Each structure stands twice: as structure tokens, then as C-alpha cells.
Image (tube, rainbow, N blue to C red; front, top):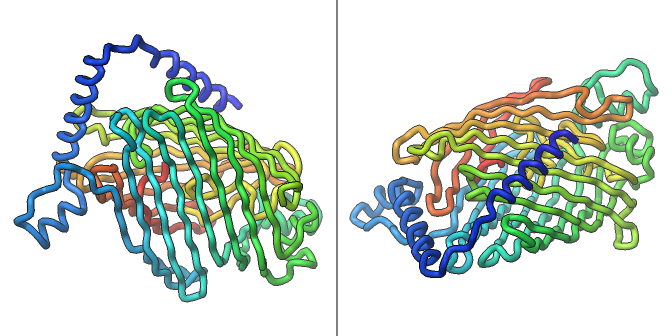
Length: 429
């Protein structure tokens, strides 16, 4: 709650400070031209992946100074014992709509992949700002046939005593279970700008999981089966369909890789049986990000902070929809652990990252990061009582300088033997 109040104070204070007298049309036009020229000059001094490909394959071709190229595409290749060998493709696009350079950058991303163990995953998400930032549309589509690793409920605290069911649900040995299922998600939110940088929004989210298959689910032998029996969910399917009501405040200069500014979003999600949800529930979520540029000469030198939380107020949420590791909107939190390694009805993740250029042309950069996750459980552990850390470092390759798209290669470490390599386009936050 203290973090939320601090976030609101900073947001409101930043909004009040940003109100100034409107300049004349001629001064405004001159200012916009100057801003465009300065932005283009800064970009032209940088070197990205496409410049490298041009120098290798068409060295006589002139460099692109229009910066109209907006799409970045990379292969998606990985391997691990859970999913097997994965082959796919990822793409990110960015563009400012209209002629006003103060319009925030609109971005979209998609990925499709298939593995040797029959896992299929597709997603498409977007964050679109109309000219002048009058409207902001955020949403995603996900379709998958997947294997979800499960490590129980809670934050990994070993609690003495309790029933056998509680011990299975809390899973103090951190035993891994594999849950096979089909998963579909459709989410869309529309935000209306009501004041400078301040938006009010509403939307819908449909999350459907079918053909869930896990051994020993009915007889309370796994955390998921214990949870489903305890809260009245079917063992092989569910739907979590609800309404979204949000407030958003943003001053960050780029959603792909911000150098400065604030992003804050808070809202309620209410799942309702009358629109197909298996159970009713109400959740409150917060997402706060702050970026500090530490150098005028190299504005890419950034100290970034992120706090994301989700809190169940009433009702019941399906087991695999509980907030937890990587369950933020972009599935990027908690590097060092697999999806939902930690989860609970109340969950909070805090992260910090130091970003710095390595080469003068900004082609290579580095990061160092750390995170702390906390959650409650059914055995009396409270939120903010136990924290689990993760940390790591990574290399950044400037993939598209026009949209500040980076190819991100991270290696992270967590507790209980967790560690891993993470490959993505764009920063985690």
C-alpha cells in the first residue's frame, strides 16, 4: 500500500508539474521541427543490426536516414528438458501515428513457435496510441498447446505442521509437476486521455484452458488437484472471463526502451460467471515503472525500477491464473525462474536494472539486474513476509535504432537451483 500511495503521489505530482501555458502555433511548429531534427540526428549516430547487414552484404548502399523501417524479426530457438527443442520466430514493430512527434510510439509484437514435444505457442500483442495520444489501445491474443511446469502455491517457505493437503499445496520440496493443456486468451483495453499523460480505460479479458491433463489430479496428489478440490474448480478445464477497469499515467519516452519517465497503471479485474467465468472474483493490480537517465552524453545509461503486484480481494481464481512469476502483462518478470514458480492469491515483484552502453555507436550495451518476489499461501504466510531473490546480467544488441528495439540476451540465477538463459526482443520493463 505504501508503494501504491508513493506511486500515486509521484504520478499526480508529475502531472501537475507538466501543465504549462500553450505556445503560439508558429512557436509550436518550430518546436516540433526542432524535435524531429534532433531525434533524427541522434538516431543517425547509432549503429544497429540492419546497418551491420548492409555493411556485410551491400557495402556500397547508402545508410537509411529516413528511419521508416519499423519491423524487427529474429528466430526463436531454444531447448530444455520440459519442452524439447523449440524453433520459431519473433517480430516487433513500432511506429508513431500521425505527424505530431509528441505522440507516443505505438508498438506490436508477435511470436509463433513449435517444439519437438508437440508444444505450440502463438501470441500477438499491441500498445497503440492514436495521433495526439487521444486514445490508447492495449491487448493481446494467445493460443497454445503447452506444458506448464508447476511447483506449488506460495513463496517457497517451509511451514511445519498442517494437513497433508497443505503440505502438498505448499510443496516445500519444490517438486516439479507438468500440466498439459490447451490455452486461449483474448484481452483488449481502451484508454481515453482525460488530461495530459493521464488515461482512463476499460476492457474485457477471456482466458480459457481446456484438456488439462496431469497425473493423480483427482485424489489430491498434486498442488493443482488440492487447490481445485478446495476451491471448487474442475480438474480438466476452466474459464476466467472478466471486465477490466484501469487508470494509467505515462511520461516515458519510449515503451520499448525508456530512457526517462514514469509508467503507472492500476486497476480492477472482476471475473463474472454470467459471461462464462467458472467462478466470480475481484482482483486489484498495480504496475509502476520509473526510469532515470544518468548521463546527458549517453542517455542510454539508465537506472530503472519496476514494481508489479496483483491482489485477490474476493472470490476464487483458477490455479494457473493465480498471479506469480512471469504473470505480468508481458510475461517477463522474475528472470531466473520458470513461469509461476512462485504464486499466490497475493503476489508482488520488485525489480531494478542498470543499463549502460558498451560501444560508442550504441550497437552493444549491457545490463545488470535483480528482483525480489513475495507471495502468500494457505498455511499462514503473509505477503511481504518472505522474499525470494533472483539476479543476473545480460548483453544487448541494438536491433532497430528507429524504434529502440534491442535483442536481449540474459542469464539469471534464482534459489533452489534455478538458473537459465533468456532471449527476447525489447527490455523486460
